[in-house]
Image 1 (cartoon, protein in one colour):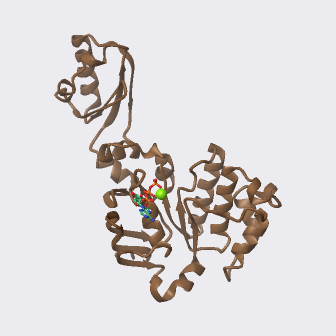
Image 2 (image 1 turned 90 degrees about the horizontal axis):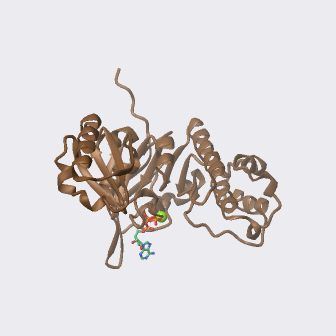
Length: 315
Ligand SMILES: Nc1ncnc2c1ncn2[C@@H]1O[C@H](COP(=O)(O)OP(=O)(O)OP(=O)(O)O)[C@@H](O)[C@H]1O
Ligand SMILES: [Mg+2]
C-alpha cells in the first residue's frame, strides 16, 4: 500500500508582494504538512516577515494564492483566526495591563481556549502573572507574546523569530514548547536566524533570499546540497595572511570553494584528508604560520553562507 501523504496545513503558490518598486516576495511557493515544522531562513530583508504576515492574513498579497487549514482568507478569515496562533516579530502589547490581563484579553478572541495559568506555566512566566507589561524584560515580553499565540489552542502556530533576544535557557524552553506542540499534532511555521534552532525543530527548511526560495528540503538534504565533506577554517598568524592566494588554494585537491572573512580563510572541501594534507604542505611552501586550523561537518549555516554570502545571524 502506498503511504497516504499528510494533509497540507498551509500552502502558498506564486506568492508576490510588492511595496512600490521593491519586490519583497517574488513568486514564492510553500507547503507545510500537518503535524510538521517548517523553518523559513534568510538574511535580513529576505522577505520572511512579509511572507509570514501574508500567510497570517495580516498583509494582502500583490498576487498569488494561500490556503490555511484548507481555507482561504477571502471568505473564511474568522474561521482561520479561530484555529491559528500568531507571534509577530515585534508585537506591541498594552503597557498598563498585567500579564494575566493580557492573556485574558487574547483568550476572549477564541472559543476553545487553554487555561491562562497553564499557558503561563508553559512559557515559564507564572511568577510574572501580576506584573504589568511595561515592567517585563525583553525576554519576558517575548515569552508573553508566545503565550498569547498559544492561549487559543491553535492547530497551526506562526512564530516570527521566536527566540531572538532570549537567553539560552529561555530559548531551550521555547524549543520544548514547540516540540510538545508538534507531538500533540500541531503544525508550526517559524522564521529564525539560529541554525541550531532550525536544525533541531524543523522537519523542512526553506531558505529565501531577495524574496525567492534558493534551497529547500529536510535539514540534511539541504546540507547534502552543499556537496562538502567538511568545512576547514584557518587563521594565519599575524602578517602572513597575504601570502595565501585564493587561486593557489582553489587548485589544492578536494577544495571546492574559498571564502575570506577578516583574517580568516574558510575552505569548503570534498575530501578532508587530501585537502588538509595539501593545505599544510602549501602553507609550509609559502611561509604561512598557523594561528589555528579547525574542521567541522557542514551545517545549515555553511549552506546559507555558501548560497547568500551572508551569515544567518547577521540580525
Ligand atoms: N511596509 C513596508 N513598506 C515598504 N517596504 C517594506 C515594508 N515591509 C517590508 N518592506 C521591505 O521588504 C523587504 C523584506 O522585509 P521583511 O521584513 O519581510 O524581511 P525579513 O526577511 O523578515 O528580515 P529580518 O530578518 O530583518 O526580519 C525589506 O527590504 C523591507 O524593507
Ligand atoms: Mg523579519
